[in-house]
Amino acid sequence: MSVAREDQPEGDLRLQAAAPAYPDASNDIPVIDEESLDPEFMRLVEVFSGNQYVNSCIQCGTCSGSCAFSYKMQQTPRKLMAMIRAGMRDEVLASDTFWYCTSCYYCTARCPRGINLTEVMYALRHLAGKRQHAQAAVFYDCFNSVLRSYGRLYESGLLVRLALKTDPMSLVAYGPLGVKMFLKGKLNLLPERVRALDEIRKLYDIAAEMEEGL
Ligand code: SF4
Ligand code: SF4
Image 1 (cartoon, protein in one colour):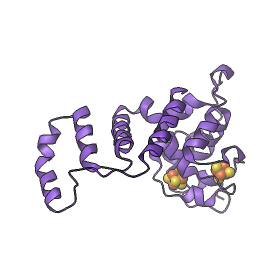
Image 2 (tube, protein in one colour; image 1 turned 45 degrees about the vertical axis):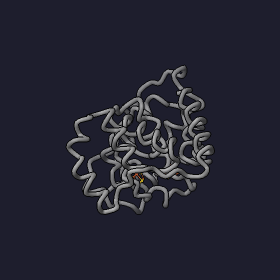
Image 3 (cartoon, protein in one colour; image 1 turned 180 degrees about the vertical axis):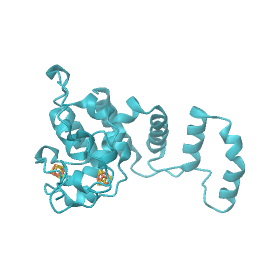
Image 4 (cartoon, helix red, strand yellow; image 1 turned 60 degrees about the vertical axis):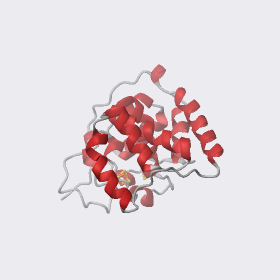
């Protein structure tokens, strides 16, 4: 007789035979110093992910049982949600869980509490970017700097900023490709600005203030 693993709700046993046991299924629970918890962390995740209901998670495990990559993640989505609610900021941001998320939205569609977990994963990537993944952080910095400047994506500007911060010689290597794309009308040389640019910059200022508190 087959038995559902932890985090796998009854009726969703698709992955049971193929995947190994979830890594958080053991009883090896680390002791957490209460002083290290951040009571504001859950609110920060709510704001960055556009969720109002993170605290309403009932730990049913439907998200983990739905996720095709749970077995690869250091913490399953259900466990990550519990850690967010507990304020385990450092442990959450050090996790690889959200880097494995493929944004399939399956967990979001099935969550009985209406929590948009996919956006939670996006938010955590953003919050962890600067701490954990230097390369991703450079990309995010360049991407945000372009959005702050123009209010919309400007590919040429992004590529130049990224190259100058990482590998200036790549500008020479990718030059011919850039010319080809320009001639086919797929690359704008000059940026376009949105009308509500001031509003977008205000949002960035608010986000920067919140990040300083991390
Ligand atoms: S996020 Fe939703 S699906 Fe996942 S454990 Fe919480 S209530 Fe269940
Ligand atoms: S959106 Fe991400 S976390 Fe949710 S089921 Fe898909 S891969 Fe898993």
